Every structure is written in structure tokens, then in C-alpha cells.
Image 1 (cartoon, one colour):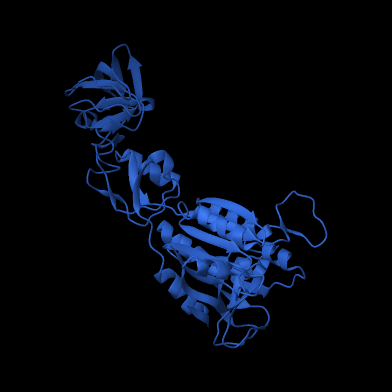
Image 2: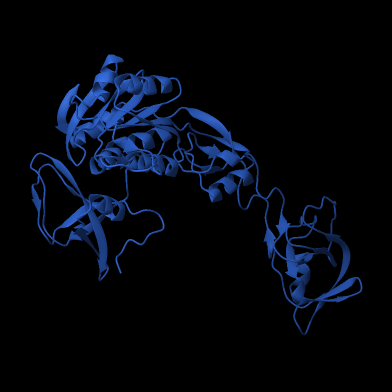
Length: 411
């Protein structure tokens, strides 16, 4: 197992050991936000027949070549069609069929004239406007042709895309199977939210945040708080081995006499990939495989826990889901003030964003509370390991981590 490795090396090692989820076929009502594992082609033409786009009259367009207000054209009404009708109506020159939006075009008709351009008199209409061939007609296969590609492998299924699949004749689709995640938070000092807080205790905010991320990613998970007792932690892990694909533990990552996780998994014959990464915050993070399941040992300190998850565990979960492993959108921004890092380390710094004259400006966060800083950040400034300082005014690439629904810019 490698120790104190570079952040970029840790990320590469992580992703090289992450399998993309197997394929499963799910019905349409279970596909939201799933990732397609194959290209999808239409099974049908849509629409399956030529239909009317308007309420009006199906006509032979040549009959209306000279129609106008001053020279209305008289046509005989020989029938009526509505959406879903299967009547085999046909017309010839001099005749028309009353038709509603979505109704099938009768044989012989090649246009529909809107009813506002016609005067009705008994079983006759007087058309006062021309209608070229194809006017107000939705031709068969206009939206989708049978055999046409309608979605590509790797696309995330949105409600609109699922509607397209339904129109293409599909009742389900092959997608990547999402991993099941076990979250295990450890520590004698940690309490479940809502319980009375005594001196020296703290609430399991790491566990809450990790589970919130998993819910946001539409991943199934279990969570458990475990005291710092070796047998209890080992039992919590072994109980999840048959069902979990990924383990996220919180706390006990450093490896001291009270940090039990590493000792426990080594006793369970895990394959250690790395432990301790030259990144800040997040240094104590560890990663390996336990019975071929991904196992992330996340630090207990909230900033370290969050950053290790966001930068290393989250890309792994995204890859398993079949999504691109880009962790967050990135953008270029001008640095408002100089920032310092640590030579030979990758540093991540909370930041807020501002827009000035169509330019994005990024400010290092200066909140005294680390928890407030975590909660209010809009972006992350990354100081790569070949830099120990980035000067004010430089244009840098930042990660955008703003929660959905919030504004990017300060007011």
C-alpha cells in the first residue's frame, strides 16, 4: 500500500480500480437520472400516420390554388375525423373532411385549412385562403423515424428524454446499475442528530452530509453510528459485505491507537491501495478493496472528511454510475487576492464568487467557522502541488460546487 502519495496519483489509482456498473434494464418509471449503457434507436415512426396540426378541414391543396376573400372556393364536406379515429375516409377534388388536431389525414388529402379561413353553410364550406401541399400537416415519421438513434450511451435520462423514449416505442432501457453504499461513522464522541448533547460530544454531521450527497446522486445507502470498539466496527463492516458495493467510513482514518479502521480492514484481508495523500484538507484518507468492494477511509474532521469525499470518493461513485467522472463544473476566474499553499501538496480552499463587468472573480472564504465556510462555499480554489502561492489578479481554473438553486454571484 502506498503512503503520502500525490493527489493526482491518488485520483488516478482510485479510478483505475473502479468498475463501471453492470447493465440492467429498467422500466420507464424507474429511469430518471439513470445513465444509458447502450445507444437507443426508435422502434417506430412517430407519428405513425400523417395527422392534422390544426382544427379545420382536410383538403386537396390544388383545389385552393386561387382561393381568396373575393373568390372563395366551395367544397363539399363528406365526413368528420378526430384524434385516434380509425375510419378509412378518402376524398377527391372538390371535397373536404372536417378534422381536429391530431386526427389522421384522410386518403387523398394533402393539406388542412384552418377553420377560421372557412365559412360553413350546411354540408358545404367556402374556403377563403390558399393551402399548399403539407400545410398544417404533421407527416408520418416527422418527429422520429423507425431505426433512428434517439439517445446515446452515457446520456443521463431526464424527464424530457424519457418522454422521447416513450414516443420511440420503448417501455424501458438498459442503464448502468447504481452502487449500494454503506456509510459507517465511528467515534465515542459522536451522537445522532436530535439526541441531547452533553459536554465533549458532537453530532454526526459528517454522516449526515455524506448521506445527503448519496441521496442527491440517487444512490441507495445504509448508515450506522458505531462506538470506538474494534468488535463493533468490524461487525458493522462484515454485516454490510453481502449487500454493499462501496464503503464510506468516517473517522479513525489516521492510524493512531484510537484510529481503528485501518487495523480492522487489514485484519479482514483488504487490498490496500493507498493511505494518506498530499492534499489539504483530507490528508488521512485511505482507499482499498475489501472482497472487491470499494472501501474509502475518510477522516473524521469535517473539512477533511468533506474534501476527501468530494475529490476522491465522489468521482469513483460517478464512474460506477456510468457518469463522466468530472467531479464538478469548472470555470476560469480572476483571483481577488493572493493565496498561499504548501509546496508538494495540492491545497483546496473554500471560495465565494462575484461577477464584475462580465468577468468572474473568486474570493478566498474568510469565515472564522470552518463549518460555516463549508456550508457557504460556492467554489473551490485549487493550489496545485507545483505552486506554493498564486498571486492576486491571476486567472485560475476553479471548481464550482454551488448547490442547485442558489445564485453563483454575490449581491
